Image (cartoon, rainbow, N blue to C red; front, side):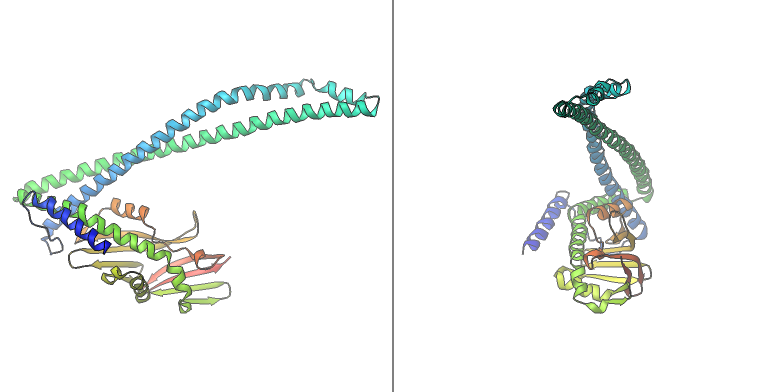
Length: 360
């Protein structure tokens, strides 16, 4: 019920947005002429790259604040460590020039046990104080060194972010220029711009929400996949210290549909080296293509990478695919299935996914 209300609300928002211009609700699922489809695809790419530029701008601001904060902390630490550096220097100089020799001499010249013990206590206090001074300086130095390392890392990240921002801005300007030239040459610029405006509103109000919803539900489902595998031992074949996990696309579809009724409009198909996910509710069509890789950092995992993303016949740019990978984890973590097991390889064959696991 809650989901139906949300979907109804989104449709109302879209209807209100489009009705202000007197335009009908777009039906982008219908076949479009190739040239029109390409123009709409470019227009959608401009929208999505603009969204990526906004994300990078926010990341740049966060990174710049981290640099400013780190520089402020380092300035404070420099003041604190200056006095400690001088104290540590005095300790080292006292040993170097023999200023502590009188304690050793007093110890050697003690005439009685009580005098020996008192001298030993004095010597122990001096040595302990010297050691504490050196330890405090060493800790403060390590802390400030770590701060400078972090500052250098933040500055490198900021440089990378700024370069990425420049690349995306150049890219969107070039794409916008291509789009304007194509519209001018089309002979039907007004109508095509109207279609682009409708499509952008449709994507921003409905399409993006639906794509994110599908990925969120898939990510939630993947968290339960290890439990499902344990209840289906036929998917695993063990030989010595090695285990082969085999999951067919029919099994994966059954798993998803048993977990969420929405997946009845969603299907997975394994082809050679590629997994395809198709969703179709009549008005919205989503087609996702991707592959798996074994990664060991920060932990052993089988991660899914989005190679293509098509919404109602329009291919979305790499920035959208990367954003989905950042926000939604469709990976599989073998150690949640069996402790002390690591994935060695993963392959996609016709109709099935094969994972080679090894104990150790």
